[in-house]
Image (cartoon, rainbow, N blue to C red; front, side, top):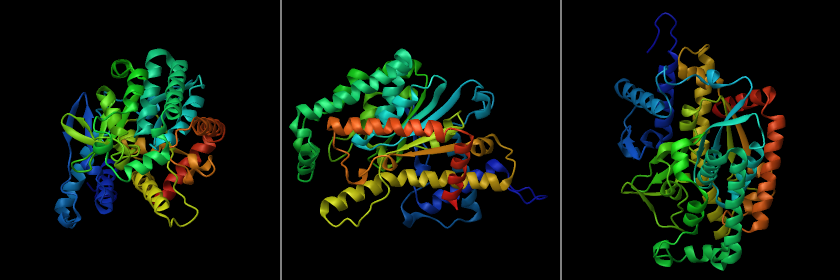
Length: 417
């Protein structure tokens, strides 16, 4: 692993070791990620996640961690050189390519609708890979289905119809009002107040999304996360495995819906484990530019003191934590590659070229931290959409440029400092 003449760790090996050590020390479940494609699953585990069972990092098990990390990184989109071009080779001179990481956030997903609506107006912009959890997964499949069926205009129309239907459902059903939902779920489980497992989202998605078209001819590659109930591990479903149940699992809040079974295993909302799956997206992306659409507020102006305020803030922290950890991991990887100098591995070059952009809804929507992710009132949804469009428009002008790319590069390194 070490070049004795230079004392420098080789790029790919160092990257795998660094990720292994970082994830091991942080105690995340990333090494237990479940990768699914074509309806199959494969388990990659670095061992038991309970801190009581962790061993000190000796030379022997450090090598074991390296092996697990290297296998993990390969599973997240790595393939033989003959099968996969580098990001630079995939970038056309006349077309901008972009991968998207879409965070979940309930009704706040209407902000992402606006972002996508604006990006789809760009004739010279193509999407490479898109990852999502919960509402992010819903927007991802709407995008992919629309593009597969009729291109950019069809994708915009599909997003419009879906979110309009969400607003209409709220207007026509008093039981969907946030205060009613909160009062009900605070007293009963979904197995009590909804024994038949009625889910309006199932009908909306079945009506709007052509899952067969996604699996057969989606022009974008998808990565959708769900959380396995049994052990809390994240499962990442790829394009060929995307189905209605996969998306419902990714958007399954356990206080609102029954767990969704996929191949005999129960799943909850993907936001608990990967919101959205970012490291797998970076591994899969052939585009150097990745845009993270961040919905859940990170800042809170005052100390929560009431029960509702505390519950809301705990939810925000819970659903932001996976993304923050993945951003830190990628920042560490970027720093390591930079310190090594010219990377010699394909993975090292991919990390070096990565430009990670960050679009935060809370920077564009006043009072978002106090708003409810259950608020599907049409006026609120359309306001979020308009603000998402404006945010994307500003990003295209100011950030998706050489100067903006350099700022994204520096911000990643700052996260790991």
